Length: 229
Image (cartoon, rainbow, N blue to C red; front, side):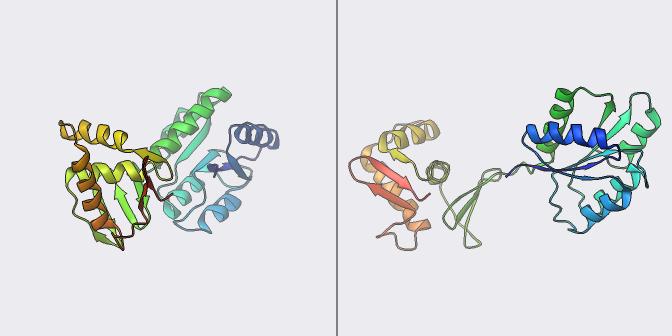
């Protein structure tokens, strides 16, 4: 799903040009030309704002960008804001940043620079934690934390590495040789064929509803394994 941007600008020519630029770059765009309309769009959804970024001008036909920024940060604090300011307007730039804006772009701006600043701001605002799943099993790779149905699973280092390999390659065939190579990188010693089967069994015992009839990690006879996609 494309990132959704709220453009707050009262100049219809700029709105049209920026909307076209952002849509061509793969974004979804809503626009508002007044303070009240912008606040209505942001505040109506509360902390679950649908916008990944708000791009706003300081001066508006009704109201101003500072009030919009304040409303955004109150309703959805994690939503980043970029101000569009005049190139020599140091006061408004400093004021906007002080109020919690994440960046500013001076007018007139270069389209490629604006897109780069938008992409960087959205990227910084995203949670750094990465969650991958394998059926009901969730892996928080930032904390090396594994849970199933809300309960933590205690895995050895090699079991964790094995689970992560399957979870990040769901739906793909993974040969036993690929698995041994991945575990070898982690353990520092080569994993024998029989030892690999033991690790697979131990992992299934911990994550499968019925380890004797596994559904999360399935055997592809003669080839390897496939995790449920």
